[in-house]
Image 1 (tube, rainbow, N blue to C red):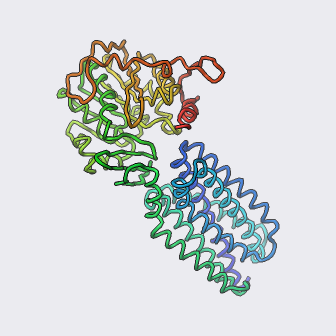
Image 2: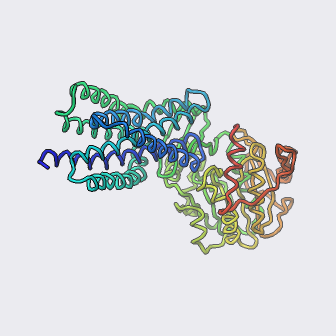
Image 3: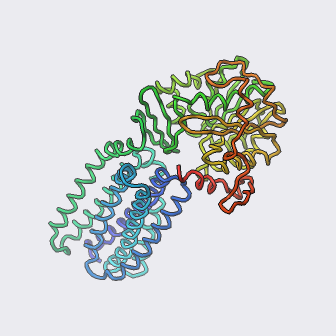
Length: 516
């Protein structure tokens, strides 16, 4: 091969690796978008990966018809990936905000399939072009395939450790689209002598570049206005941490915290939730020397516990340091938690709750489980028999645990499955629920190694809602929210504990909340 042919051959190998990096980034980006906007991360990642690979397969099949004008076909495919993929996150937020229900899911799956199909056409075309230039068929094919597969690994690592945490989903999409466009323009320039109407293609590429650069600089701000439509109050803080999207809203004295789109509390009525979460367990425990909070990174649960002057130490375990930092620095959250996370009695540990309990040998008087609902695989792990067994093993003989357990009204089977799972560990349980206007009717499972008698509990600290006299009333459940659940066939539902091996709670949860 002459020197120019060698340069072209190397460019093809590099191009295959770069477009593969872009392809895998778009693939996982679409999964992340689906997980955030549509919920159930496992389901969304499964669907997007399946659709993307199916699209690649169909695209590879269609590429058999492309035997001429290989370079110009590749360039236009890159133009298509750049514009569709680049605007994917931006348009997804717009559709979610303004289009009818269900349109967002259809759109996400459509662009996933389209980008997958375009990506599937790329590689066979590059292989054919490499074979035209290369020394032997096998060597050219092997090199292009190596660049493609190695690029897939690089793309996955870039998205997880750089793009998502540093740029967010909107800017990441525009940035990767720009990379696709740059590859197309470089190939266009190097092969310009083989291309008719070179100037026309260059103008189209330049126009796409202007759109992508505009999106890179202004798209996130516009997407923010779209996302604001999803929340009833103005957003005062938005952050995408390594673990979740954190949204804080505030309007007319009401501050609300959302994690991955799910409401965590409203300052207008959070005291109803947190007082029931904390004070029955604190009142039943014989000692308050060593307290464990799993979750509760907003610091409000810790604030309620610190009302007890005999508290020795509070260990708060929350996975996301970004939530902790927000709770320690944001003026609205500090007003709610009264600076509890900076109290000398509170130790904050950023770690997965399951792993923390597995590695700890400490015993606790009270364990508070203030975790998000089990709407994905990683959270479901924290609602299993195995997890509650760890809680049992860290409770002192006179200790008490209180577990937030979603709504017995909106998700009746979910609530009683959680209760059944806790009870399967050998702990005694007591079921409580309370009306929280921003949430609706909300349930808790109180657990101890010994039988629980609410009539012997006193609440000696100041509260806004809960009193000693009303504790027993929290155990009364109506007919539409008790544990006698009737299915559509008129038969009694037999509840089964949720386990790591049989994570039945995820599907039950999804079915329960899909209409709310």
